[in-house]
Image (tube, rainbow, N blue to C red; front, side):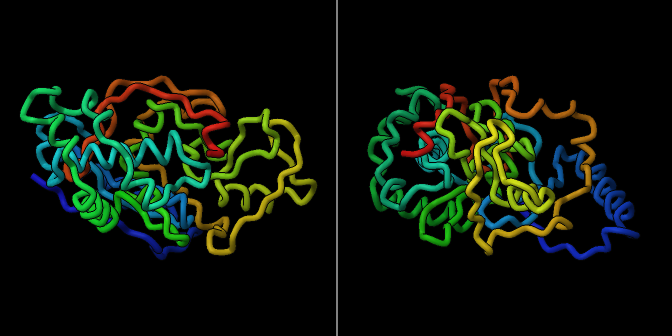
Length: 289
């Protein structure tokens, strides 16, 4: 079964008198969705700063994986793009079209859903042509698993941000110093010895509260913030609703502390399932390549 994916944004409500009503309404929605092991989750898009709400599947099992309409090579291609963006890419969280199309998929064979010899899985990856990659790339952009940045590069789409929180944790993606979420698109401290990174919208909010010197909270180095107007986020846009499933979870780990990793990543029924991979830590040097 393939569940329809819904994204909601620009929800209009009075954050004062109607905030509790809004929270209660979302909790009722999630209570109903929980019977189908679904969840309405809030997420901020790291490229445009907007808040989105999406319905995702909370179960990653073989039956849910059968719901995807993507082929094994397309899933491997998607996974290779994610790894290139998050683990090997620059701190702006994107790669070029050419870089995406030149990714080799053979290395994904050992982390796929089939063995090297089963069902021709390895040959299918090896023979995945350039035109097939171009088609898959357009489909992933259309379905919002990937995102076309203003400068024409390829970044993660809102569906990836909604569904891959556990994958980010398992693969030790560095966290934003302010919000403690994965810092896929963020600014780095100018001190090469410091590992602090902060989302641009988090920087704007942080510096708007502190009128004094703009310095790194980790090492005290002067922070040269150049946040683009297109990504400016007003303080009242921050989601205050705490979804039902989040209330039952333990509090987030302290900032700059790695979360414990699991063996499985989250997957929705229509998502290209992300198989387990060898974990690779993102280093400061790799963020600048």
